Length: 416
Image 1 (cartoon, rainbow, N blue to C red):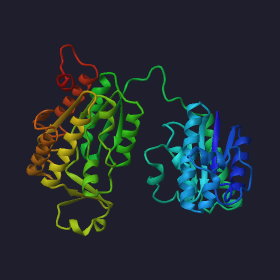
Image 2 (image 1 turned 180 degrees about the vertical axis):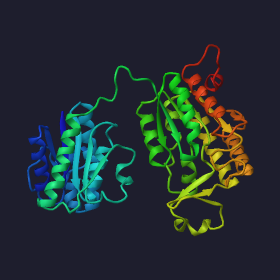
Image 3 (image 1 turned 90 degrees about the vertical axis):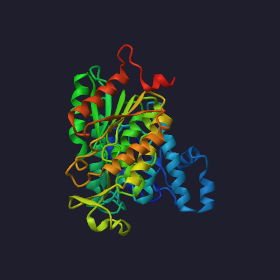
């Protein structure tokens, strides 16, 4: 098993060689991959830039002739990702480490995102102290701030690059196995602070039934991570109580999980129970960061750094249609839609700031439209989403979908 070390050897060659030598001194096998293009390599690579660009369907000569740094970075990222994925499929990769600035970070993390959860991934980057979501995405990528620019081996870069080598060696040598013989079937669940009581109670019911529950915080990256892991086949079922990220995607909040949210389970045929948790809100940062166009809306200051905006009945109608359409149209496996009539979050109930019957009715009407006006029923419950009765009903519904009792006919079976 080998650590793949990625660097642009025309600009970061000496630094990459330092990391390679430290990894080898720590007992790791290393292949140095040159993802540079326009300059001459400072040190020899184990995998050449010619091999990298060939894996991207082009050639080094063609990119040199084009003399376009952006095109070279894009091709290097594609080629590195393809080479790493192929090596992993052969069983040759135990970890990926990369060093670089903006170009190296783009190339290195593109390759890392092609690998599944649990494979050590470490990016030493000059950009690691800021917003890193665009590079990390929904993967377990460790970003290490280089502190100084990666140019030469000095008393600061030596410490940071040495830390990187030691961290990768440690992760590789002491890696835990993902599964054991005693592991229970996994359930994915989504939760927000305002749906916590529901998910906590549902989790208890599912654990009592013999399942292990993995809870994802519905903050955009959480939803993306769940969708990615569902697609990898990790879960026996999905309890998607908290679909709030759809509201941020629709309205323009800061916690969107992208347009593919609420599609992976349906496409994979994995049993799922879906509800409307926290669709009463769109998330923004501090109050002064909320776009001016929303100045007349209803807000709730969750804390100094989080401002919640109430979704309107019209927005709820569109959100309901999206949920209904995605669950009913894409579902290859058994699915159920559950709706709590007395509120969808802790602040959407009688006496709370986001209590809005018209908005909830809009959400329910939208679901009916999205599912074809009853072709895929949305089951209504006379409870609030955080009432234990609703949580227990949702958990039991998922248990019945995964392991149906005798004579139970699911919606999926009825449609067939």
